[in-house]
Amino acid sequence: MNEFQILDIRNYLLSKNLPVDLLMEVEDHFVAHVNDLCQTKAMCFEDAFAKVKEFWKEDLTESYYYNGKSTTQFVKEIKTRQLNKILLSSFIATASLVFLLYLLAFSVSNEIFTEVLPCITIIFLSIAGMHYLINFNIFRFSKNNPKIRLNIYQNGNILVFLAGFATIVLGNTYNALSEKIHNFLTGNSSVGFASFLILLITIWFYTFGFLMQMRFVKSAKKTMKIMKFSKLSF
Image (cartoon, rainbow, N blue to C red):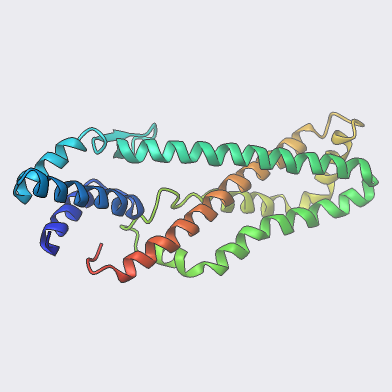
């Protein structure tokens, strides 16, 4: 199979708006299947390609999310499966952090808790920012090439920014919120439930977004390396 035939396959897959990482994976399957049909069934490239397209027709059929955005059934199933895994991990991580916070509330006084919690929150939320800066070249590439979707995790870190924004907005009320949260966790007052709920949602948003951000970077590094050394452009 020559480069022009591979380019035909790639252009077909590009028309399906597949993320680059999945596009390359599906392309490998297409090339292998077409080659196999050409050799074992003595088919010409056009006939073999048509047969493989028919074989993948259901998986590459256009499907829609609840927000109206379209994708292929193949991508939708993979993304849903991966997001469910991240969702579960974020719930476990959030529950673990809340449990540690609960232990802290019973280990120190209200005054110390009020001083420590804002510091812990700022340090905790800054981890994603450090990760972003360390991998800034990847995010810059994504921003400068909006038509290229590197993987299914792209733009998932928007939740990190929302959590960070919420933290900044609540900045002047840290001490008051921390005191209410301590009272709620130690059972001294039910008034702090709303404050605790705000903290809980912020932690979950942040954790889910940060896990998405890490998956995006890990996958993007591999994808960009392959794109760099690929003879054919995307």
